[in-house]
Length: 116
Image (cartoon, rainbow, N blue to C red):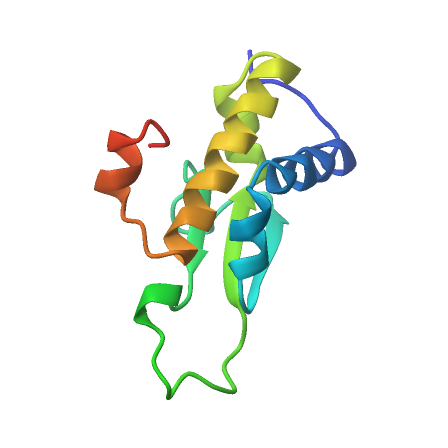
């Protein structure tokens, strides 16, 4: 049975997961926003998504662009979790995974590191 959790509590967990990012990485994050949405409209099972230009790909021409977006999909995560502890763990994994994309780390490397 899928876990149940209020949006407010879920957003708190996302904020707590962001606090897990080492300070030197958090300080290096640039022009990125983290959002919570219920589901991805085209892929309802998607847990999170990074959309933007990774720091490693930015050049001197990078200016005046909208912030990168990390979106965490609440209902998709709740669907695969049974307990609040499961949600806490999955939110942390998903947030770190998507933030890693902001730093230019691809899925293969994330899987290798255990954050897949």
